[in-house]
Amino acid sequence: MFGSVFSGGIVKKAIEKGFINVKVHDLRDYTSGKHKQVDDRPYGGSPGMVLKPEPLFTAIERLKGENSDPVYLMSPQGNPFTSRMAEQMAEIPRMILICGRYEGVDERVIQHLVTDEVSIGDYVLTGGEPAAVVIIDAVSRFIPGVVGKMESVKRDSFFSGIFDYPQYTRPREYKGKKVPEILFSGNHNRIEKWRRKKMLEKTWKLRPELFNEIKLSPEENKILEEIALKESKNNESN
Ligand code: ADE
Image (tube, rainbow, N blue to C red):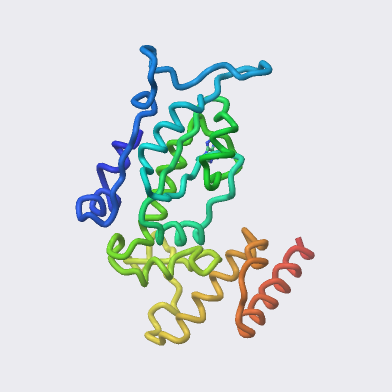
């Protein structure tokens, strides 16, 4: 599950260059019985299986040693993973991600081993592995050197808390669809303003609640008011 993701693209290069290091551990290597059992039926009865505490305690105690690495459990009940979290996690030298499976993880693991539970969205995956891949990818982008220019990471969608502006490349016209004229104006100031407006427009349309989280400049607030007014007029006439 991890092999294909880390054997290509930017994450692979980051691993090769030593910017990041990812080690995948099989929980079965931390079991004691001959059956290498990592899960068991839930007490109190319910369908499915629960990850046992012993292999996880053993694995994490061994991996941590004397270090105080944070331990994140991938879980649909976790804190929603955001760009801000990715940026903060990129400051942490080493961390352990637990991929939950089956119906869940013994609560004692969550109470006594886990620093935080992290969710990548409001849906349930069959296991935490895809979530760990998402987190490793997003966190890596914030590690200096991984993406060519940190400036481009910081300009990206969600770094500023809202959506990105639309991008265009050649050809200038494709099947009658033209690239907006302003991008050829050579006026960087006007282009910047246009881009900012587009970011505000798109965010307002798709995720207006994101504006609760960020602080806009007075000028941006004014643009947003105009966008909101135009939108409400459009809705009325529909
Ligand atoms: N494991 C199962 N579903 C998950 C989700 N949405 N996020 C993180 N880990 C998960």
